[in-house]
Amino acid sequence: MGQKRYTRKDHNESLAVQSLNQFALDKLAQLERVSLRRVLAESARDGLYVERDGRKLLSFSCNDYLNLSHHPAVKAAAQEAITRYGTGAGASRLVTGNHPLLIELEEKLARLKGTEAACVFGSGYLANLGVIATLVGKEDLILIDRLSHACIHAGAQLSGAATLVFDHNDMDHVTSLLKANRGAYPHALLITEGVFSMDGDRAPLKALSALCKAHNSWFMIDDAHGLGVIGDGRGSAAEAGCAADIPLQMGTLSKAAGSYGGYLCASKPIIDLMKTRARTLIYSTGLAPASAAAAIAALDIFEREPELTRMPLLKAQSFTQRLGLPLAQSPIVPLIIGEPEAALEASHLLAEEGFLVTAIRPPTVPQGTARLRIAFSAAHPDAEIERLAGVISTRLGLSHLCPASS
Ligand SMILES: *Cc1c(COP(=O)(O)O)cnc(C)c1O
Image 1 (tube, rainbow, N blue to C red):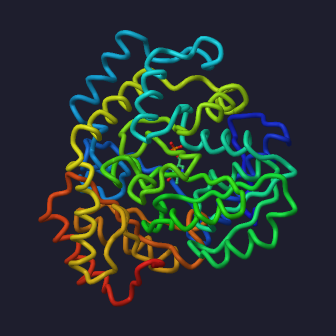
Image 2: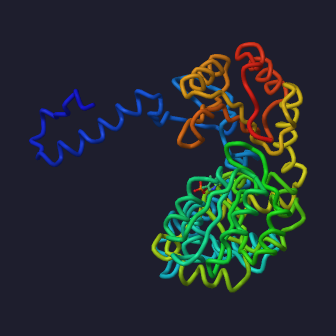
Image 3: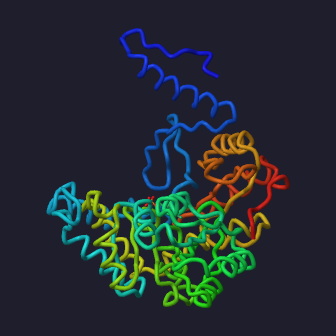
């Protein structure tokens, strides 16, 4: 490590600055050697297609499941908001950043989710950090599904609570952990995802909510990939028929809603507490007016066009049926490949055929499960889905791939 010394001839850098840059170079070289270095590819996107290296690729790597980020009504709402309220919120919501669109958005979210109230954060990541650390502290217990998103783990760490990780969707494991540990803590918070972002499967929400009831534990779901595409757009809890038993429903406006921002839907006391105490809400600038307006327009579309919200899952299911894979449970279909190099190679091969399917590698997913993550949107042409399935079975040799869990 560090064979190549870092020097910039044009600068007279101090030793401290040199060692800082050397530190970064060494780290990057180390990641490069195991195919885990990442680069941000420029992605000019016009909805379905992404331009990469001068080529237009049909993208199966966007979370814009309903293509609303390019919907005329959503774009017009964002433009109108800029005209009326400007480009930035200007301050934290607790100071002067609480523009009327945020209040309207919270009312709409609460209505869609059937909760008393809602709180909008700057992003889904910020929502999880703020919500988790506001509810539990050092004396408390958190239980998290192993495959939960990085920001749920980060929120748990930030809270300082004792954190136990249960095996993915494993009711026996989580039950035994609760039985053995619940008694030692004043509060316990169980967190899982409605739709798992890298596996596309769903959590057993009914069983988990019953378990939480039985063990006097608080239940929170992150439905980042459920909003807009499951349960006629209302999300995983609504579809499972247990929304009323899930007191903490978090999600993001950056996926099917085509905008940006995160939210928590909950009772009024919980939301009032967030607005008073959640540090990522208090010490961060309010969501920009254009993002809030776009999200409002998107939620209106979920309500008006339930048939549109069903399209991504139907497209994913047509794909899994065509390839003889287990029926898709969400618009996300993973093809587990194994090693990072092989996943990258598969992704390059699909790019040659005109498809953008990004390889997902550790640490985003566990070691040995590097994969192609295929995300379907309402506007994907059926003929192209058919062609993608054909290319995967002929050029990638599907027999070597295995579907993820489930
Ligand atoms: C994307 C995602 C987030 C983060 O949401 P952002 O609004 O993009 O910050 C949180 N949780 C899950 C499960 C996600 O997939």
